[in-house]
Length: 107
Length: 107
DNA sequence: TTCATATGTCATGAATTTATTACGCATAAA
DNA sequence: TTTATGCGTAATAAATTCATGACATATGAA
Picture 1 (cartoon, helix red, strand yellow):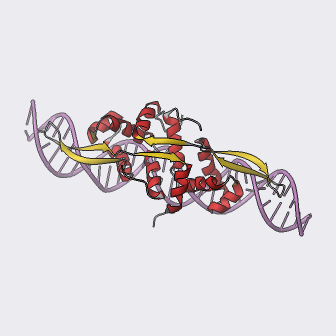
Picture 2 (cartoon, rainbow over the protein chains, first blue to last red):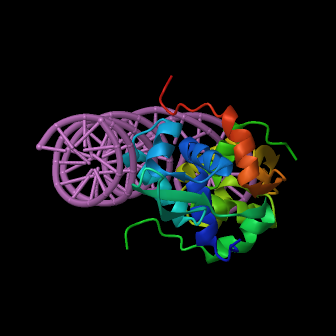
Picture 3 (cartoon, helix red, strand yellow):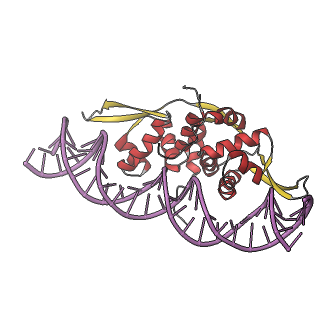
């Protein structure tokens, strides 16, 4: 898996995981890769909303999308989990925090 | 350290860590315990704002506060890091997600 | 051609989170 | 008693995040 090398990357991961729907999405993708429309039905939310959450997860490099053709012949966009595994503790945070780009404002 | 036993606890941790100032606060507390006013100066924010962030960290059980008397004789409230260390990966999330209390609305 | 199911985005609004300012109270030291 | 430094909170505003509904396009099957 990809390594965490900066506070900003670490922060992006936490932000991506800080929502119940996104944790549920990860849970679903743990079982199998899935395409957007089906995933929306599984999780019980609208596609527009799902896109929003998928975007955050993808930006944090926790998932990744690709196109595939369904048996029905229609094109579908599948998302797969991007393997990740790190030891989360205060030392990791202390180590990466100094490289945080501390501004939340628009630049 | 305390164990993570539910999706809600896991979510609370991610929410607590999903802000640059809170990561910086943890970094500071890694060096040494600190009292509110001094911590606010160290981090460069106002006390009211710091209280807000400390509250989130404390609710996630990542830090803990207690009172002490300064050499000056004044009462001060110190915060210390609450040791934590988990193996963060998709399996952990998949395991705890089912116990999430999926409602964000006011009840 | 019409229906069902895919993809993707835009505009708007609701809800939360984050941040600021202004108070009030207590105690030690000048 | 005035100044400096602690504590803590309430009210309000600013910013971001989260959610909905309406559209638009494409393809296979009836």
